[in-house]
Length: 310
Length: 260
Image (cartoon, chains in turn brown, yellow):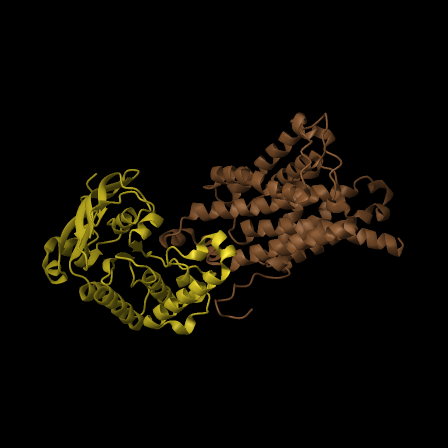
């Protein structure tokens, strides 16, 4: 690969890192800060991607297009559409403890994916929605600036949330629910808020993804890409630590992408199973992290007291 | 004033609390004693909204609060501690206290985002209150420790400290003295007395340490086998044959009459 090719690949790579970093930040609000075991990330990611795809593309006979909204309005819509969906899911699952919440959310994510797959009038079904344009005719370089700005903004918002009294209540819930209730906090309300805000952040990442790739289809929202990788990123980076979530996205996506070259080095009789091999490698990576550094690369730190510098 | 009126609760075939009625007068430190399994903690859980009663009613200042969830009771001025300390183990001692005050501006996420500096200013005020409480309880030297690292007795003090971060009118203390050494116990009793005297807190205290009960509480309620069997000051209860047999006496294991 020559220098220009490497640069082009680097831009492509970093855009996806940014999009995954936003998802990891959303998950950090749910898991890292509150202890909610959401493994339905792909569902909210898909809601965002499809919302933005449908609202920003031109008219089409095969799906509900033609709104032609500008990029930023489409992104705003991802949050607005995700809000009631996440609220509903959160209300239904609010009383569920970790493992039951996990089962419920993965089911809901699959329901959402199958909805997009089967409601062809809305989403063009399995053929997907093509022709989602980047704003202002930017290439991957210009788009990277936009994605980076969103990573910075979301990081700031999630970090402020973490340091606020709101985040303190979430950490208390994660630590000891009966005592949090005894301190007068409405646990269900705080859990629901964290779930909804985290899910809307994932939807926003979905919107950014749709414009970056230019094409959405149900295939992209299988649990492996949408959910599993994000979990590995957050745990590897350091759950509870927002910079860790971003670092985890970078490192895990680097490893994941470099295993794409596996096809060239695998023994001939294993060619064709490289995708299974990649998942296998990521699984091994996760095991190594969990055993050797369970807190992740950047462990959680306590937020500073008011007036304390940091 | 907490009025407990004919409260009953069964777990399966076990009648844990049977038709218990008594009143915790405003400004009193009311004791609740009895052998293990007498139903004291169950009654506390019912008053504090952790479990609903099968029948009966709880009133706080005349208002029916039966079955209200714990966090709602908190806002009505009724708070509790737990038999086993319920600290937030992965938060610092200061954070444990700072969590408690009600209606913090920063507990609203939007306000935290949009008026960050106001939230920080308010939090600074809450921090000062927390430090005052820690100084009052004389555990300010551990203020930045994780609460999980405290000794059992310090955790009990921290539990009490959390109730001091509220505008509580009535506090339910479930065995505040359990596992606390003599020196610390004196400090704990002193803190409870001061809160009662200086801030007008009403207390209802479950405790097995009869010296502590005798020092703090008047009146004292005695429960056995889910029923209230006596009430009065500690001196008179010590003379009461029924109480002696059920609890204070020579520990006869031949308790009979479970009743069901």
